[in-house]
Image (cartoon, rainbow, N blue to C red; front, side, top):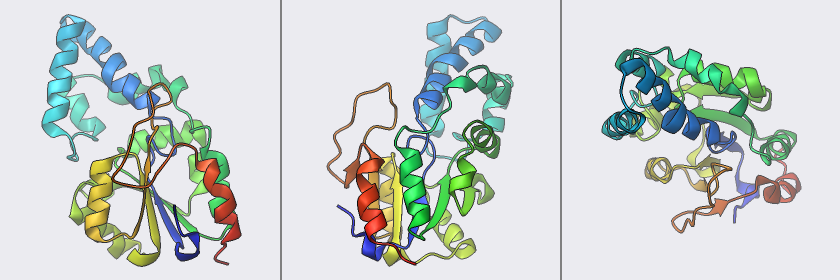
Length: 224
């Protein structure tokens, strides 16, 4: 599936790739609508519809991932509300062994997430995921998301990586398309980002449901 002898840099998404997407799906589709309905004096169904319509309007943009934007739109303390369900934040069951194998193999490991810096900080606080990475980037630092070619250009300028020897892993097919357009050679999709939802059938990219199946090949092909 992947030729690890030709991969020296690994770019990893966070939510749905290293972390279980269940927290984010629960927060944005259930918890926030509940709190919004209470505060705005709307029915839960109306609050949910209003939010989902707004999500779709800004999907893929920096606003969609910006906690400050949603705090302004809903007049609610988004980070505080996230802490109300923070017990749901967790690494995927298969992430630890995969990340340790990458580190032991000598590869450069870089987190590239569209998550807002406050969300990234909250997730680091609960999972210590920063211990696995050489460097962590929120795309808010660059002013554009992974859906945009500008992000890849700005990221590569700040953190040089060779397109031919870089693997990018994400659960979003739209974002994988963007990385492919930029020229990243090795691409891998996560087919089961949310532990509470069915595995997706992915045909456009090589896909994985358990990172532990990759560990042996990673360790057989160290780059040190």
